[in-house]
Length: 89
Image 1 (cartoon, one colour):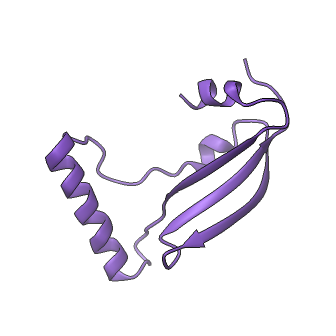
Image 2 (cartoon, helix red, strand yellow; image 1 turned 90 degrees about the vertical axis):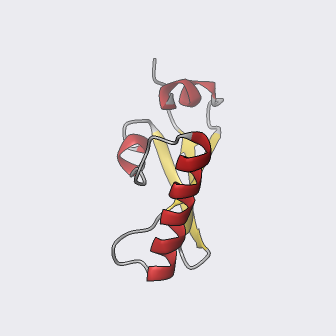
Image 3 (tube, one colour; image 1 turned 120 degrees about the vertical axis):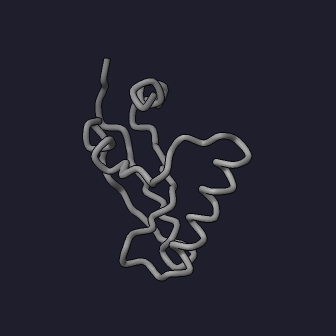
């Protein structure tokens, strides 16, 4: 899916990635909130995933230039800004 999305970005276009980032060292309230959200979506939509994915390794496979990042809500939510620098077929 990421390859399809990447190929839709115009040359020198931008990709904004935003996701939750909760780890074992995160405050307990963030861990509890994330588990509650997973339970809710598992119960209401039959969500299969049980943990957050680390997308950084996926983004490294594409010709993207990292521009900036910012954390929100006690760094529980992180946004990353990339710019396309090449092509993938």
